[in-house]
Amino acid sequence: MALSPQFGSIIPSQSQQALSTNYLNFSGANGVNFSQQYLPELYEQEVERYGNRTLSGFLRMVGAEMPMTSDQVIWSEQERLHISYNNCVVAGAGGAAATITIPVTAVGVAPQIVNVVSPLSTIVVMDNFGNEAKCLVTASNTAQAGAGAGQLIVEVYQGANLAANGIANGNPVKIFVYGSDFQKGSSTANAAVGANASTGAGNLLNPMVTVDPAFTTFTNSPIIIRSQYTVNGSDTAQIGWVEVSTEDGTGGYLWYLKAESETRLRFEDYLEMAMVEGELNAGAGAVPAQNGGTEGLFAAIQNGGNVQVGFTAAAGLDSFDAILKNLDTQGAIEENMLFLNRSTALDFDDMLASISGGFSGGTAFGLFENSEEMALNLGFSGFRRGSYDFYKTDWKYLNDASTRGALTGPASIEGILVPAGTSTVYDQILGTNIRRPFLHVRYRASQADDRRMKSWLTGSVGGAFTSSLDAMEVNFLSERCLVTQARNNFVLFRGI
Image 1: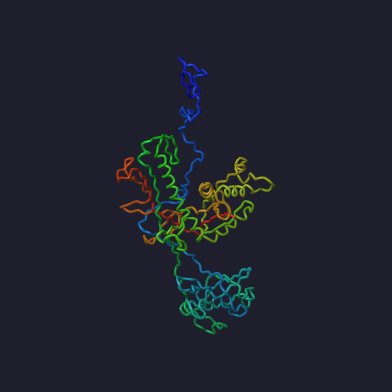
Image 2: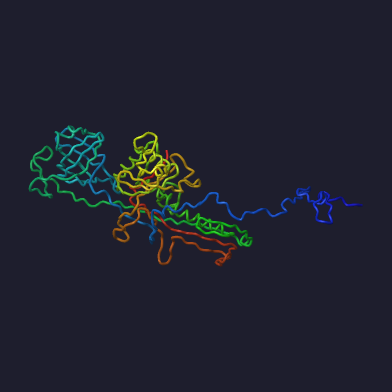
């Protein structure tokens, strides 16, 4: 009795000939499948479909890294040199002597009056409607509390009174000191004025006020950033080679350390991203107090810098000039860097390209040294406006879809303006004035341990023999914080 043929009735041939009776059915019955009998066509090289995926480099471009040994970094920044007050209250504007009350400022726990305007100072009084008057301070109460605390008695140089100069009671006014006006033979300890409604003839006023230099103290604390990559011992024995070209400049064939390499690159990005995005623990949420957080760049600009909402090219130079006018009220640092996302960078290009030299719909070549090629290259990387120089560049962190590039609307951050150069500050630890970049990173380090960027192996695989764990653990650690000095000169561009 003949056996029934199997696998599609295969009949072997005596010679190597491709016949209809001697081929294998690659997808036969009973679950038999020989369709994968050949090795697949394997590309060894990875396809770099996202290009350079790393996001770090911003802080290396604009700042520096310096060691420290403490849990906290403290620095002091100067306050303004001249004496001025906003939101002062006027009373008795229709009389010969008016009263201006300086607002209460919270200092520590108890509210105090901060008044350093001396008697016989000359001041400018301005309201929000364009009215102003030059006045002489005939009496000044620098008391912190009690009746008349923080009050100035003033008399005008021109006109009968403040009301005659358009300044009414109840409207908030700004005052600033521009000098003083003493009589002949007077003393600063016993300044006298002549007969007037507020003091009477020959009244002796309280002595001049000594103005101590004011400063603002800022502080930040480092956070510990950690990461780890683990591969078990069994996987290290199954080697599959892949030819790679990594973002850190290395290339060649890697096996399981390919993932370790990417873990390192990702950790290095975290070192910068944490300095940019960090927030202090305000204690209002459920985050434990031991996780204090750190103040990153965005938070620092929000807490004392300048925020520009909805910059667009449609507004032309007017919108940008408003930024310049605000910078004039701050440090007026001449050179600045613009780190922008793609949309805002194009807005700047459109704004600059729209400048016309007298004919509609075109660009005046004369603005570009009469070079047509320069005029048509509308990707502007640097420009000067007023007394400021600006250097513009794309910031990949704001464009990447895995980070800020995925956000739109009010939550989006579209760019920042960073002053170039260095600032002079008083270092509490060194006890002297020092020059530092406006942005710099402080990391924990001592003679015993440098925590700028640590990496070490643990386990019992891959050359590590530190424990009985059948795996290799690659550990990464850093402890650092960002110092944002003179944040009043920074601008944060937000979406709308």
